[in-house]
Amino acid sequence: MIIVPHEDDEILMAGGIIEEAVKNEKRVTVVMATNGDYEGTDKITGAVRLPETIAGLKVLGLKSENVIFMGYADTGMAKGDSFLDGLYFEKEEEKVHSGRCSDETYGWEEKKDFHREFYGKAGSYTRKNFKEDLRQILLLKKPDTIFTTSEEDMHGDHSGLFLFVREILKEERENGYAPVLYSGVAHSKAGDLVWPKRSSQILPFSCPPGFDEGTLKWKDRISFPVPESMRREDLNQNHKARALLEHKHALKEDAVEFLYAFIKADEVFWRI
Image (cartoon, rainbow, N blue to C red; front, side, top):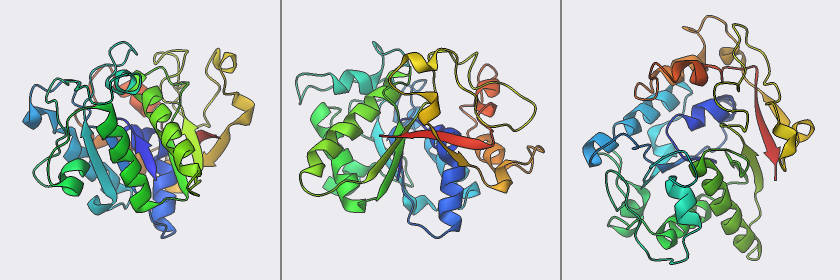
């Protein structure tokens, strides 16, 4: 199971892992915690990135029925603005947090959000609902391996999501469920203008400047080589590039260089 905050994180961080797992006929589920609706104004404009996710994962061989949209909000990167960071540290379990497009879960016309599918109605944006929705997804699918984001990530949604995953797994360990957990970084302390390192060649990831000052150490990383389809320097033939190309709303002029910098020879995670 790959659990990420925003549409395109699954491609950037684990596109090769997904494609290899699908090719080897493993059961793969991709979970989107938020709708990536930071620039939306309502549920219609907020859902525009959801079909792009389905199209991008189709390039990697994953079918839409293996994608889950939790349908929560994306409100900003800084931890003071981030929806998931704010939700994680909320002391009132049932206090409703509002996003730019909604204060309850939503999907799009062809694929409902998880809460609506499971309970028959939308769920309010509360800490309790998010945590229990994620718990239900984990217990329904029971993945033996989970890839998610990291507490070390500078985006509040990325670090907040990790904290939720870790909290749930600590609780479920007492019930005998203990999957292998990997966490990875998309937004490093070095800043998005510096890392991932830009290169015209498809090379392995390099250590972000200042990375080892945190709790994760570069020497402890686990490098997952990407398949040959993602090592092709002709980006028209490169599956990670082609999958990213489906994310039209993410590929803004000031973001293209950063996103394409994730086309590397490996994908890097830490076992937690």
